[in-house]
Image (tube, rainbow, N blue to C red; front, side, top):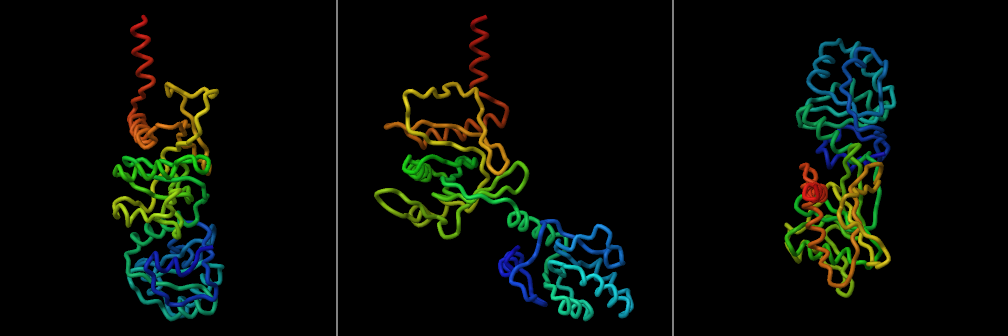
Length: 302
């Protein structure tokens, strides 16, 4: 279910008829232009999608007699339709408005071109209907790489992020990260509205990062490309020293590169995170430092 007010605001829609329900029963981000249903073909018709009327559909209806148009629209609106949107600022036919009111179907209008509106609406619905998950952590944009810092409370995530912001990078979310899977292999992270731009630093309290460092120090959302887990240093633990093992962390069904970084007094975590982000960029371009080192080492041995 999608809140009607939020839907109207984000897609710049004008209300022609507002149904009794406060929420829209939209079940899929897919959008349909109902040319075939208007002609009477309802096989595979999915009423849970947004029904968009453009020049083609309105011209098709205009060529009908008033009696045939009423019959077609009555049959169309009798289905459990989520909403109907008319594009290009076109005026609805009286039969359309009457059928919408009688069947209690929301009827909206936009001044946007049909194709552009469909693309915009699909992007909006993909985010609204995609799987969501909240995680405790800090999300920062480091050289265009979205780095999610996780670890136990008090391990130093916020302090590392603060140092990164001071070094010119951007804060996306602190403490709570809202994660959304917008495609099968892509995650977007953002901050809940109430916490946006704020960071908690123990001993200081809450600070408004945007007010302290400027608007360029914050970002509304970022893809999650790398997860760095901060753990207290344990001498008995055997840490990866070459980087040959590429670990992945499953988040909403997406495997994200995952690194465990031990935290010890004197370690500059901000620099470690910066180097990890740069190293990931190199790997994406096909260069692996660890494999390159091993290949050179083997050549010298042979």
